[in-house]
Length: 234
Image (cartoon, rainbow, N blue to C red):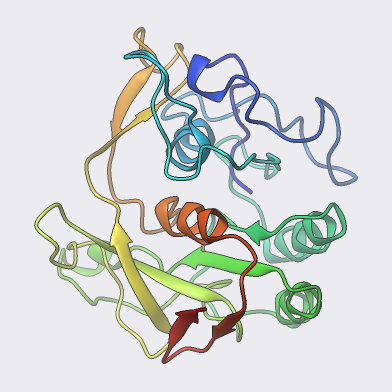
């Protein structure tokens, strides 16, 4: 759930599930990236399911998986919590194993969001969301509070780390945080309208963390036990 995905990128050939035009009622076309400034949805999809194969095709963390792109209504992949709740339900019904809403609201999770998350959990779906962007509150790690939908019970809230393994200055603190994953200065595919060569360096992926959803899918549907304090896969 992001800005959509540019289906023409070589790294994503054959990696998108469904077909063009299949989307929740009222949603934009998911096979087109509406973010003309950064191509965020394309970057996230490439980091998860990029198939690799040569120097022009990035290898993602879960290349045997596929992505069903759901475009949020804003021009850069922004929406509202009612839309996010609707899309979680739609993706669950479409058979998603892992759902990653690429958005964050600085507020408690709404009733719609909480109920949608609980519905997805009853279908054995893993939900992963970024904690938010704490750096806007002074450029320090641990600023602000965990955003919705990451703060909804049952969602795996993911912070971001630097290349050295430290929490990035964009990271957010809070009891809801479960994990931290690389999310700063990562090379990812983008539409050529963003960069002529089709790749760019993505920064501050704390609102849209791609690596943990990919890792979740790579591990498959093994026996899972998720809590805010523990994460085990057996």
